[in-house]
Length: 342
Image (cartoon, rainbow, N blue to C red; front, side):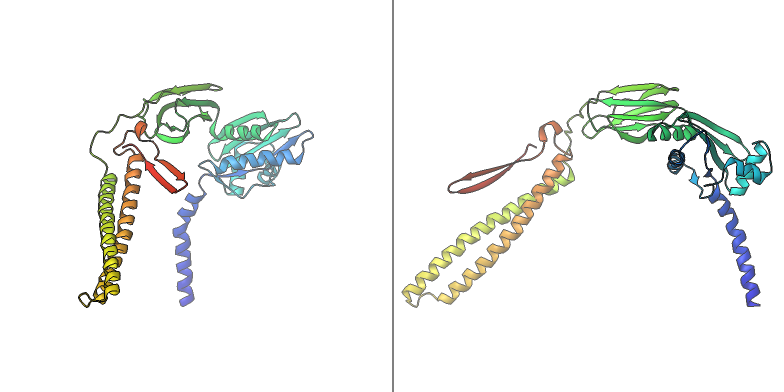
């Protein structure tokens, strides 16, 4: 009884998982072994095949592990068809458990012809071009999957501006890439600059479209300082006050040390040296604490102020710049200065 229940559960689980398995298989592509016309090295055939697989991996489709050494001739034998008909190709898709197959030939003249077939839909696209080198192979495979392309070049007066293609970031200027045919909206953006106006371009077969932008620096923000800068100034002020207190405490400690030395020397009984020693130790402890706390707060505050300034929260980017560090050395010692505009 228990075994029967387990069997029923397994069947139900398999039945429930079936739609997910079918959905997972949607979009799978199998690359058949490319046939050759004339004397073609196996290395070239493998390179073209790998180029196709590489483009599939970068596409919305999934590369099926099936295919491999299967050729169109094998497909015809399995499907028992003399001609490469739609029925024959549908049978091949069923045999490989995929929805799409890519097949083709590589010729001795250095060209290749590829075909993309979808089950029940027919031939989606064919591509025929030279495969003289690896780049040519990749372009041929890309053209098969995405269709004919043009070249889009985007330039700007500012290097490193981000390009938005139809609202999605695709790269930075200077930008150049093969782009499928169609109409696109372009816009550039960069920190410290106003976003560019929207431009519309149309890319046709074989076109090389060049678009130039002129970015304008952002206006100075005259509003209230950023929260980070405000906190930074508060911490800097508090740390500075603590350092001043540490200096005052150090002076008092030195005075107590002098009084202690004088009391020990005179030993007149009017002043208790032990009391002076305790007071000196207390002042030393307070001084050390104030130096540590004050230095930490001041350094943290200055760091926040600098970060807030560089983020453009309350500083003109053209005037702020990067903080300048100067080191001055001489025979009697050295000093360091930190300078920035805000």
